[in-house]
Each structure stands twice: as C-alpha cells, then as structure tokens.
Length: 293
Image (tube, rainbow, N blue to C red; front, top):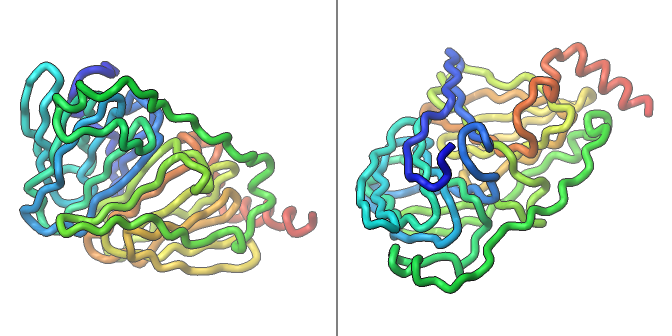
C-alpha cells in the first residue's frame, strides 16, 4: 500500500446472516502496525470534533456506526471532505494531514487506529503547526509480548475480567482508548467488529490456542458466555468504556444482541485459522487434559 498518500480503503466484508464482520490488520489493509485504538461515541447529532494534525502519526478512521464527515488538508495544501457511512470503508491519513470530524449522525461511533501511542509533542491544531513542530522522536517501542506457550491448557474463567478503559468525557462526544503500553494485557495486532447483527443471532462458538481478546460493546449491548470446560459465566457488555478480557483457552459465545449493536474485538494475534478451536468436543478434550495436570 502507498503509505504516503491519503486514500479511501475498502475493508474486507465477510457477509453472514448472523451479522457481518470486517477486520483490519497490517500489512493487509493498512501500512503500519496498530499501536493505539480509540473510539468516539455519545456524539450529539450534527456536532464536530476539534481538528488536529500530527507530524509523525498515521491514522485510519472508520465509521463503526452511523455516519460523519472527515475534513482534511494535506501538507501540499489539498483540501477535501470525505463522508464515512459504511463499516467496511475507511480513510487512511498519512502523517502531516490535518483532519476534523464533523456532521455526526445520531448514535455514530468513530474508530481511529494510529501508528503511534499518544504523544502531545506530536500534535498540532493546524497543518502549518504540524509542519513547524520540533523534530521529536515519537517512535513507538512495543512492549515485549507475554509468553503464551501452552496457553490453551492453562486459562480458566478466573483469568477473565472486565477492564475499565479510560473515558474522556466531552460535550461533543466521549472517547475511550486502548494502546500498546504496560497498562493493557497484550500488544494489539488486529481489530475486527461485528455489525448488522439480527437481534436473535449467536456469534463466536470457539476458543483460541494463542490469541487473547478484549471485547467491547462499541454500540448497543450483548452477552458474552464464557466456558473453560468446567464452568460457564455470562458477562453483559453495554458500555463502550468497558472491555471483557479473554485469554487463550476459554470458549466464548456472543448472543442476546440489542438492535444496532456493534461488537468490537481487539486481539493479540493476526488471523490464522490454526489458532482457532471451533469444535466444542475437541475443546472439552483439551480442557479435560488441563484438569489432569
């Protein structure tokens, strides 16, 4: 992908009568490793979010729900407005691009993925300000990934928990964030989300051998049923500033979706079919071995 040109991106759309799915990971859809993910929600209709530019940070912006406009200006002076209103479309913004989000529809959710963790020294309110910023080093140093060797045979429901995310409240929309720092249980490598989900649908029905997840109700609400092979527990997610942490080796199902729900999942691994255990009988055999250890 051309990494120095502003462009619209068509994301994968995996159609399913139980709800559609789109995902983002590098280098398949975007030309940078995801170091920070944040989402803007509770934006009153017609409001805007203050514009800014970054000297080094690159971004991808997606309308998870509803619609809004992205007003841009590049370092060469080109100005344009892009309307985002599909969950499988995104806009890629290279560094030195000023952008403003405005014209939000009711119940919109904007997801923004960044190439660096937040650094106020990299931020400016105008494109000229960004060009004039001092030459600071804002490169992200990824935390060392935690070992997941034999993770499927070690995790139980006791390892699952609700994570309270930062919630930055603003009259023009609140913001929550996950980024690759020691504050979070894993390094972020992939984001996917379910949308257009009928109210009677059930999704999931698998565990991971290595992948860890944070599941967020970016919009609406739903239940996540967890099973470690010996007991089950149900978590209800209905706040965009709360995430359910699920380690490898825990079976999970998602159901009881409310109308207009968007289920966002942040993962520690990029997609690999070999990471999935999709057969519950096989899962039970694995967890029986776990009990015997």
